[in-house]
Every structure is written in structure tokens, then in C-alpha cells.
Length: 362
Image (cartoon, rainbow, N blue to C red; front, side):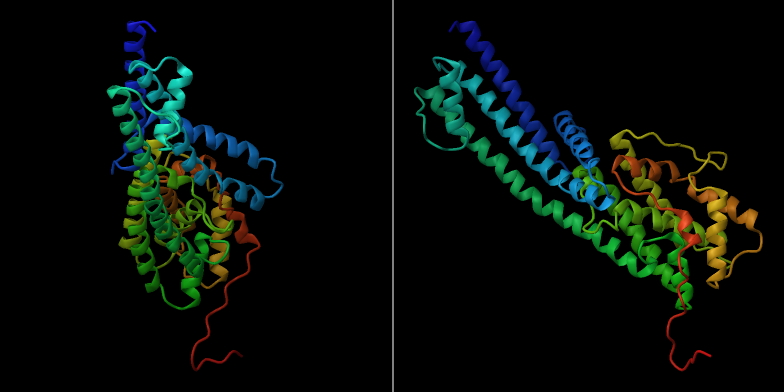
């Protein structure tokens, strides 16, 4: 091969390997938001593939089961593609180091990357490249092995609160269920604990789901629960409480909503999902006045004390929900999550009062 061609092959191989290492480091190691083109390309391609396959499922449970495989397989695809590109990159390097042809270069590169020892390097340049490639291959594998526990630790912390929410909101989780259950145990003080827990949950969500972005696609263990649905439930419950319950508004609920829309904005910024930067009550929300009235009627029949002015309550609720409405609705589509149906309030049974010591039913 001509000298100029070997030099060009060396430059191409070096640039390709730098691209691979840059993608691996910024995806697995960098503790901040990073838009890696190679990673985004793989994620989008795999996401579309699994979305198309899931459409063949006749029920949401089947679709959810198919989509749940998407994120783990995408993670493995990262590693497989990076290793494949490394083989190609070092093959160009071996051409520059004197390999007689591409077949010999690829054979030597594969043997070195996977430390197989099936092909022997000749000359100082090839030997050095062989050792270097073996180190790169082991490093890429070690990154994946170290990354998986981090992913699942963050996943378990997220899902722990999602699972706990079923106790406070019922199954399926609904925002009016949160208030109704608090009424059933004759204590709204327990909601302060809920707002505080989910304020912290949203803060961690904004950090982990922008630095470990594949977490957004990890689905909850149960098809009946999703992290997006849980987030929507808590935010709507806080908005409902401050807008319609005839008790002093909770500052902790307001902080929960604030931490929620800040976290959702961070995720939207990464995925380039548009949202109103200056929300106001003139912007339409996804919840209709009719659905809102159905929920108020359900809460009234549950014994929840409601404000007298329903129009003012609706106005207040819109003022809270407009802060996160567009983002939550976009997430339902982006992450293939079922939307909370507010019309369930029309048919959902009421929660009876909890059993109290010394109280007999008549």
C-alpha cells in the first residue's frame, strides 16, 4: 500500500476511536448533561424499533412487556456498537502500522480487542497497537459492568416511591385518590409527608434522568404503574389540594409542584421537547372543565371539604397545572405511557372511612 494511504488510514482510525471513547466517557462517566450524537442515534433507532414492534400487541400489558426490553437491549447495543467501531478503528491503525491488507488488519484487530491471541502482531508498531487495543476493549467492558449497578440503584430509588404511592392514591393511582384517602383516615397532615417525599423525588429525577438518560425508558415493574403517571398524580393532587380543598393552602404542596416542573423542564431540555417558558392561565390545559367538575363531585361525595366558589377553584387549579401540563402530556407520548383518565372519577367507587377504635357503624 502507498505511504499516503497508510497515513490516511491512521488518521481515520485515530479519529474513529476518539469518537468511540468520547461517546463512552460522556455516556457512562460524565456526571452532567451531555448530548452525545452516537448515543442519541442508537437510542432513537432502538426506541423507534421497539415502538413499532409493540404496536403489534393487542393490549397495553403486552405492549408494555415489549417496551420494557427496549432500554436494557439499548444499553447492550451501546457496548456492541462501540466494540465493533473499535475493531474498525484499530484495523485502520494496523493498516498504518504495516498490515499487508484489510483482511489481515481486521483479523489482527479482532484478536487484539477480545484478547484472543489468534493472530500475532509483527513489528513494534503493531505490537504497541495490539496492547493498546486490548486495553481499550477491557476498559469498554469494565465501563458497562460498572454502569449497570448505578443505573439499577437509581431505578430502584425511583420505583420505591412510585410503589409507595399506591398506598396513598389507590390502584390505579389518581390525584383525587390521594385526597380521598387522606379524608378516609381523617388526617390531611399525612399529605405534608407526601409532598416532602416527592419534592425530593423530583429533585433526584431531574438529576438522574438527565445524566443517566436511558433511565427515562426504563419502565416500572408493573404495567399498572409508570413513573410518568405517578409524577402526574402527585402534581395534580398537590394542585387539587391547594385549589379545591377548603383548608389553608399547603406551602409544601406548592414547593412539590415547583420542584416537579423544574425537573420536567430539565428532561424536556435534553430531549428538545417544547414547553411554555412563561406559563399563564390563558394557555389551554389537557384537563377539561367537565373532567374537573366530575372530580369535584367525586370528592364531595367522599366527604372532602371543598371551597364554595367552584369557578375560583377551577381558575386556581389551571394556574397550578399550566406550569407542568404541556410537559407531562408530551411525556405520555415520548415514553409511551398511558394518560391518567379523569373520567374514572365518574365510575370509581368511593373509599370508605378507615376503621377507628371505639367507633361502631350504625
